[in-house]
Length: 136
Image 1 (cartoon, rainbow, N blue to C red):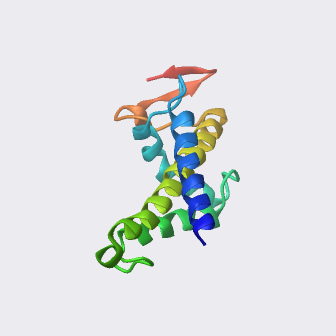
Image 2 (image 1 turned 90 degrees about the vertical axis):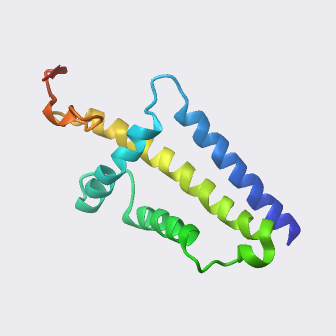
């Protein structure tokens, strides 16, 4: 049992470092842009436009977030303090890694779509691409 818990924690740490490495590459999208792309990712996935993710994976991510913020917890923090926080840390590390990897793929897919403006900032609604050039 201790070996399984240790392996789970090790995998959580690996996921976090992998997500940080991907997110901090030069030219990579920042966390603000990644978080702003999540509604577009969900919309495109549920409409069937984007096939790089699945409804199940997105629902699992939502379920993981709800688990962490829910007062009902598998290992309650009030009774087991550090151990109670450890399960939340493992879940949050998976969510962070999943957000980075899902948005990395989605943003690359979105950039490849012809005539599709990316909403990356307040003026993004006014942007459009024509022959690879941004038109305002």
